Each structure stands twice: as structure tokens, then as C-alpha cells.
Image 1: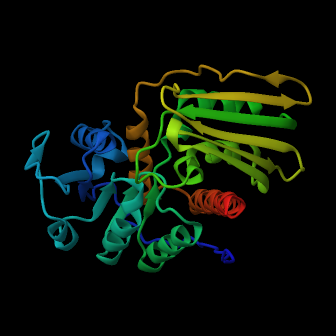
Image 2 (image 1 turned 180 degrees about the vertical axis):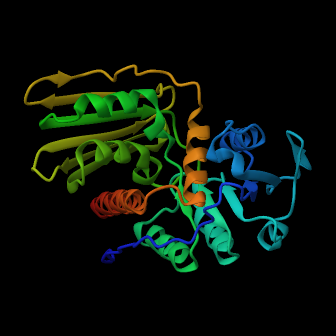
Length: 312
């Protein structure tokens, strides 16, 4: 099956007046959902996060209320005129269905990564939002971490010769999708640091009896410099990122610490989403972000198909 090429042009009608408020619901009340509820109830003062008014939460479980916020049926969230925004914090496999429903109902959407589990679906969802004049925002809090912000500053202007990023973590629960999609944040890091990448080769080692999986991907920069991305998960494996970046002038083998900010990662993401709804994010920035998201999805799809075809 050939991957379709999509280009999403940004022409989104948003409310530009700072006084406008957006009623919202949080869908899914796991760890991320509870953080979203907390942040929406106590938004960062004098920021775009203050434009949200939390109307309720949606969950498959019977919760009645969380942090004083009452539960409402999905149908009510889709049809209420005072709900203009949905924050989707469910398992990855359900993102596509929820996004489609809320976009069809005319609601803006903020969704935890990845918005879908295939490139074509992600592009279709973006196109659906575009056609309806809605914001579809995919959360990427990894870009707000102090370590990444400092690393991006440190590599700026340097000429990469070769690099590697090795991620480790515990086994994934069902519903997270293939490693390339659950690992989209690492791919996003690499693309943000070194620009668009092309796929060269990949191997996948799976040992179900040990709950161990390891994917090693060979990528190339536009200058044909090799970049290796490894995603490894196993029982008892501590969560961490390990880098080895060799430049023409120096080599980096440890992530920088960076400066810890007083504003949490999800709150920073909420401010960005709110800024998009206010129309204060430049169109060229929106276009760059959408292009990067689609590029990462296309790479993730290429790698998955290669690994599955090789296994077959």
C-alpha cells in the first residue's frame, strides 16, 4: 500500500478577541486527563490558558465527578453549544474515533500524541479540521522539557557527522500502538534538532516471553549524515534517553540539564493551544508544526511497514 502525500495549508478561522472564552471537556481521566483537569481549573494567570472554562469530563467509567468536575455523557459533550473544545486524553487506539466525532460536531480538539496510529489517518484528520476551520492540536510536551530546550540551543549551528538517540522504558500496555507511534516524541526530537529525515533501514527484536522489544532504525539527514534511533522496552528497564552526537567540532554524550521552569509541561501546552484558538500564533508557525507532525507520521509508517514486512 502506497503512502499518500498530503499538504495541509493553514487557513483557520479562530476567535481573535482575548475576551472570548471556550467551554471545554476532558475526555479520559487517566494520569494525563487528571493533569489537564487540574490545569484547566487553575490556569496560568494572564496567559492564553485562561480562555478555557471546564464544563465537564467524559469517561467510560462511572466517576460522577473528579476534582469537583461532573461527568457527562459523550453525546452531551458533542451536542452542547457551550462546549467548543475537547481535550482528548484516552489510550492511543481511541484517539482517531474521538477526534473525528468532535471535529464533525464543530469542536476544536487538543489530543495527546499520537493523534492516530497511521500516517494516512493523521493527514485525513488534519484535512478534516482544515475544512471545518477548526484547530486540531497534537500535544508534544517533550519539546517543552528543560533538557530538550537546552539541547536545541547547544546543537544550533553545529554540523552533525553522526548521531544516536536510545530510549528505554517499561513494557507498553495494550492500546499504545506500534513502537514507532508510541515513540513519536523521540522521532520528533530528532526532526526538530536535525531537520527532515529519510528512512534507510530498521530491525525489530521481540521477545514476548520476556516482555522485551527493541527497534533500531537507521535514518539519514538531508546531508546524508547517519542518525540511529533505538526504542527499547522491557520489564524493569528504567525510563531514560541516551544520546551520542558527534559534530565536526565536538561530541555530546549526555543530555544537558537545562533550566527548570516554574510552569508545568502540560500547562505550557495548554497555553500554546489557547494561543492558537486566539489566533495569536503566526500562520507560518502553524504550517511548520503541521509539516513536522506529518513528516514524523510518514517516517513512523515507513518504519512500521518495513519491520512488519521483514518479520512476515
